[in-house]
View (tube, rainbow, N blue to C red):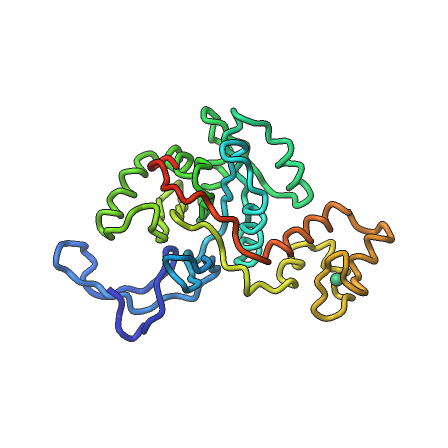
Length: 282
Ligand code: ZN
């Protein structure tokens, strides 16, 4: 249990804490979390219908694995863009995992994200996961993806038996899997895989344009000459990035990617089909 002096602050998956008391784990024993260590990174979830407050969902992660299907459902670049902004903001390395490669070619999605220089994996149902495993080993990786993209299937292939573990958690909390927003950490080859059932979007409203531009080192060098609060979009007045683009000094595809990510903060998330997930392999 949480010590009273911690107040109302929450403890989330990935937090490093100090614990006192009986640590044996036997029934009817008690240990208290007395301190939460400073968080190296913080990933936030957007408020939604079930919870009106924007919350930290995972602390201290290193990497964000963005799972996106190449077909069935069709790729959602807007979702990927929003995940990328959340990753850059939280200080996590993004890793693009394109699933269902047996159903469609990855060329278009890879073309879209090539200017960002992202690490990526193209995965079919029988794909060897060796390279992905080595990218995950020793890291704390958060998996995100909307329903039907094969995220749970992928996590279960990496850590067999995950379905049972998830069922156990549900039995304890009494919450249905599709409504649960709590993250689940699974030990994996010297690191952790953190599955985030029910996380459909990230809180991006607080993110300053400068934090996103900082991720684009080639463009950031020009942005210092922009007017304060420059949107860096094509219509912005006296934007130094636009000027450099017109002089041919920067890659137009990089500018297009930056502008897309900047505008991904605006508006609502794409809503998902309201039908309940079909099962643990959603
Ligand atoms: Zn600008």
